[in-house]
Length: 207
Image (cartoon, rainbow, N blue to C red):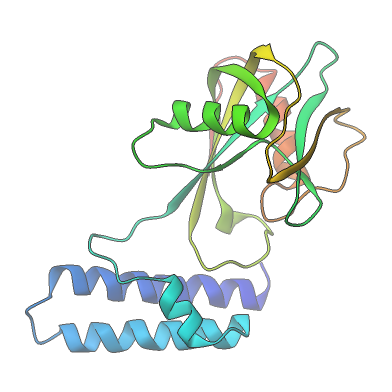
């Protein structure tokens, strides 16, 4: 982990501690100190990310409950040739496993199946959970949120290629001949590890 990534993780911790303090000390004299800590963390984040602090303040609304990591869901789908199904993100023109942020009100299973259908056009079923990843443990580009990734082994039941507006292409790839991956969403080492886990029964990897 490089210095900027490590520093960003420490800033996230300070921000989270400050917001937890504000949740539980709204009427306490410590609230002012927690608010100041939160403001400092946003200022530090703005310097590191070269973004105006006002933009971060608008992006990070004050927490009303105990702050927790955001959840990203991803579906690994393999065909009879052991090729992996990937989608090409319009935002960066690079490839990843179908998936995205988990929506409130849906189970993890429902979330990943929704993402697969929306991004690829395929209906699928979840076979099992493969891994729970902490993005901090991998060389992803620095980002403001603290994220857990839930990765599921899925199987297509019906449908055909029909990507939505966020997705440029959908295709199958040999695991040994992958296209350029979207580093914010999936890394090659993670994808290779998921395929290896998928070939083994009843093993769930977690950081």
